[in-house]
Length: 403
Ligand code: FES
Ligand SMILES: [Fe+2]
Image (cartoon, rainbow, N blue to C red; front, side, top):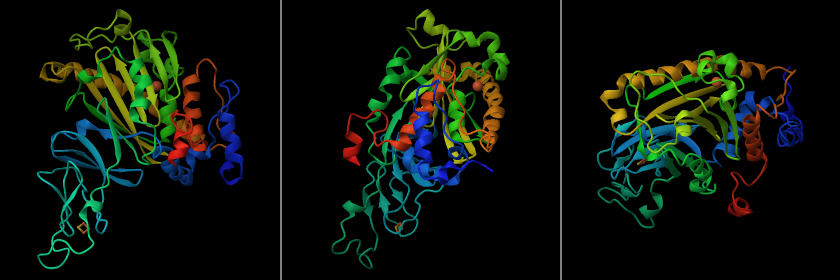
């Protein structure tokens, strides 16, 4: 009984044109974009591959010479911290016969060796440096074969605030351009000082029965605060919040951030009184949710598992080495517990929105031009990603030339 505009020629174009209208007149994205397997697969190429998408954190690569396989939307990737400590991402496949190189996180002492015919690749460069017996017994080469052309395929990668971003299609505008507006907005917070909370107060996953876009949308608004988060609303009310709606990120801020704690955590230096008392929460499109406050920072990267299931990977960071050490274990524990309570409160509504996407009486809904501007900014970004050659405000014509 679901309305399947997807199957009607031109229906998607019309629906997405409605999404791009002014907030008060716009509709939301149509239902099948939340429920259809075919659309979910389409998003992999049309949206995630073309943008800068987060696939993990540096904290999950705990030492030099470490490799972690990540299957992102069916694509086998390999995140590594190389022998110099730099983070890189390769396609996780041997160039010879296509064996998946690494199947579980592991330490790589020297080179990365394929278990099938023992080809070896340098971790730092991806260069193919050993091809034993490839040309016959004790002959590692043969005529016409040049290992230079058969190294690991590197993925375009950027690391920001410990998040590892990839641009699988390789033709998005540079990450530095993409992140600049948010970096400028949060320039007062010296994110080079953030340290992962580690074993206590560092990380938590949430397995949620919803489309990844609904997790983003819920994060872009504070409108639901009084009804879904009564505890949070007791000290940071809806009226204390303001909306943020930019081209590549959206969310909300509060002018009242003051959770009480007997052992306050160290704060970012040189903040104004307003910055100390405020906090901002933005979704960086497509799949990252961020929070910055005076005494900690967090990121949630969304790992879509299907049209109706998303794993949310929460990582918390504190300010300076001491804050991540033994002296602040209890403060970190309380911090993550507070957030756990808030994020669990959101699960019910995002799962109900997913259920509602099967109703023939709904096909995207509408937006308050006052409360839902951040939410609409995200819908508009998705609509643009699905219909336009130029994604993420690339200079005029640039993406078209590259494609
Ligand atoms: S498939 Fe890897 S060495 Fe042959
Ligand atoms: Fe919420």
